[in-house]
Amino acid sequence: MSQKQAEEAIVMNYSEMEVEGKEPEGAQNDTSVKGSIRRLFWHGGSVYDAWFSCASNQVAQVLLTLPYSFSQLGMVSGVLFQVFYGLMGSWTAYLISVLYVEYRTRKEKENVSFKNHVIQWFEVLDGLLGPFWKVLGLAFNCTFLLCGSVIQLIGCASNIYYINDHLDKRTWTYIFGACCATTVFIPSFHNYRLWSFLGLGMTTYTAWYLTIASLVHGQIEDVKHSAPTKMVLYFTGATNILYTFGGHAVTVEIMHAMWKPKKFKAIYLLATLYVFTLTLPSAISVYWAYGDTLLDHANALSLLPKTGFRDLAVVLMLIHQFITFGFACTPLYFVWEKVIGMHDTKSIVKRALARLPVVIPIWFLAIIFPFFGPINSAVGALLVSFTVYIIPAMAYILTYRTAFARKNAVEKPPFFLPSWTAVYLVNIFVVLWVLIVGFGFGGWASVTNFVRQVDSFGLFAKCYQCPPRAVNSHLAPPPPSRKT
Image (cartoon, rainbow, N blue to C red):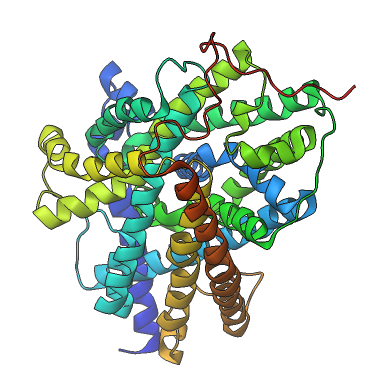
C-alpha cells in the first residue's frame, strides 16, 4: 500500500469512528417528553459532557485533604506541586487520548466493530503493544480504581461523622457501602450526564465554602506554618497531590462515550484549569487559617465551625462521592462483565446483578483501612505513578518508535511540540521524574506514614481520628480559637 493510500485509509476510518460514535438517530428523532428527558439527563456524549466528567471526577474527597498536604509541604511547595502535577496529568491524559484514537483507527481498518463493546485502556495497550502491556495495564488500572473506590467510601464515612456522630465511622462505612452499590444500575459513562454536572457544582460549592469560611474565621491563636519539617511528611504531601491530578485512569471510557472522540484532546487540560480555581484557593486559605493544626486533621471539614453552610458542604460532598464511586467502579464493572461474558447483555437488571460481586471487596477494604488522607498518598505513589503517568508515557514512546509508525500516525505531535524528538524528551522526563520522585521517594514516605497509622489506630479502626466523646457527644468539638 502506498503512503497516499495509507493516509486515505486512515482518514476514512477516522470518519467512520465519528459516524459510529454519533448519538443514535432514533434518540435524535424522538420528540416525545420521555425522549427529551432521556436526552437531557441520560444520554451524554458531547464535548461538554466529557469536560464535566473529567472535571467532576478529578476532584472529589481529595479536595478535603489538600490543606493537610499543604501542612506537610508548606505553602510554596504546595502551590508549585499542584500546578506542576496538574499540567503533567493533562499531558499524559493527552497521550492516552492519542493512543486510543490510534488503536481504534487501526482496529476499524480491520473491520472490527465496537457497537456493543466499551474500549478500555488495557485493550488499547494490548492492541498497540501486545499481551505483556495488556496485563501490566490491567493490573495497575484495576488496582488503582479499586483503591479509588475504597477511598470514596472512607471519605463518605469521614464526612457524615461531622454531621451525625451518634454512629461511628465504621458503621457509616457499612451504610454508605450499601448506598454506593446502587451504581451497578448505571450502564456506562454515557449515562452520567446529569451526575457529572451536579457533581462539579457540589465540589465548586465545597471548595469556595472552605475558602470563604477560613478567611472569615481568620487565623487561629498562635498559628504556625512550619512545613516543611520532615522529609517523610514532605513527600507524603507531594504524592497526595500526584494522586489528586491522576484522575484520568478513566480517560478511555470517557472518550469512548463521546460522539466525536477526537475532540477530547484538550478537554482534560481545560478541566484541570477549572479545577485549579477550586483546589488552590481552598487549600491556601485553610492552611493559612489553621497551619500546623492540619497535621492531625486530614479532613479539612473537621476544623471548620459547625454551621449550616458546613453541613451543606458535607451533604454535597457525600452525594459527589457517590458519583465518583460510580466513576471509579464503572470500568471495573466493564472488566468483570467481560470476564464472565455479560458485557454485551442489554438487560440493565442482569448486568447490575452480575456487577454486585465487584462492590464487596471494596466495602471490605474500606472497613480494614479507614485512614482518610494517608491512604491517598500511598495509592498515589504506588499505583497512580504507574497507571496514569509512567505507563502512558512509555506506551506512547514504544508505539511510535519506528519511522513507519510515526509517518502513519493518526495524530501528529501537538502544535506546541512540533517534533517527535521534543515529545519523546518530555515523555522521558515524565517517566524519570515520577519513577524517582513519585514512586521512589513518595512510595517510601507514604508507606512509612501509612504503617504509622496502622500502628497507631490498628486495622478495622472503629473511628479513625475521631475526637474523644464528650457528655454532649452530638455537638461538634469547638474549633481552635481565633487569633486576636
